Image (cartoon, rainbow, N blue to C red; front, top):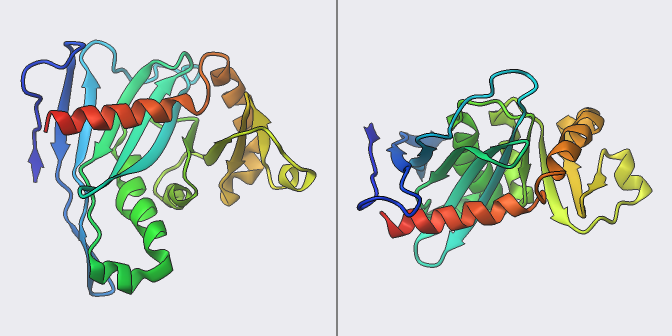
Amino acid sequence: MVGVFKSRGRLPDGFMRWEAIGLPTTKRAGLPVGHGPRLFVLQEWFMVASASSSADLAFGFLTACDASGVGTFGGYLLVDLSGRPLEFHCTAPVRVTRAQQILYGASLQRHLHGEQIGGPLLKATALTPAAVLTDLDSLLHARSHGNSPVAVVREGAMVTADDEASGVFALGGVRVQPHDVDRSQAEQLQTHLAELAQSIELVEPFARIRAAIDEAQQHS
């Protein structure tokens, strides 16, 4: 079922809209794991556009945040080389039951972020980014749901020799750690991200995502 979520009146910038996409209930091994999250798609009337050529690189930023008493939200922002937003997607809050906490145990965070939140968000975009960056290790588990390399970024540029052997590198004051399956692409990933880092700080878009999710809650 597909629904439409619209703000009350116009958002501050005057040219954005939200759409809510309902996902079906998911079941694994006969155990209910809750409803798939609704995806709220933010589109800019005049600015959202697909990359027109291989030279027009897009980059994804994927994160999740908890709201006390509400649930966990996921957000996915795609930008171009200048940091301009191309697409934004976020989920409605995903709530975890006590039964799920018991049944999933230590694997709950990995399942919640990787399967229930990150996976649907990576599938929702019309673009294929050159790379997807996240600030949460648990969202690396969404890698299997997309075709782009995924890496976790952290502030602080300390990288050891062992790190470098694992494909980890420092760039623009952050430490970039590719998913295990993307280690062989570390050099190309560093080249692409170095271009992006000339325009924005690599951790800055995560603040945009959280602010956009707050905005979505206010207009729900």
